[in-house]
Image (cartoon, rainbow, N blue to C red; front, side):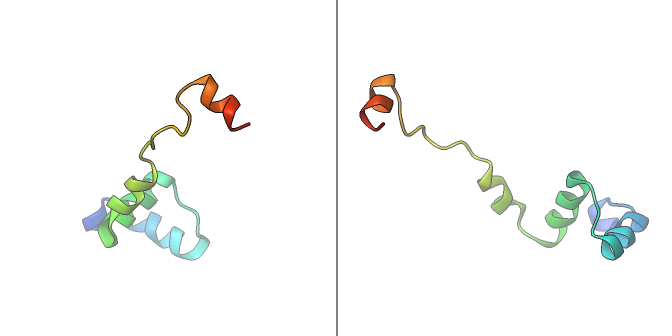
Length: 60
């Protein structure tokens, strides 16, 4: 896992025992075992619901 992900073996062992890991290293591990595309989808910007101040006021 360490070789595939680029996360040091000691960090993986620490993560397994304590649950503590940096977000960057967690994502490196997740990319190795899972589908990081699903995580990337969560961060995509969506179309704004309101485009003008009038839209906002109309729905207030």
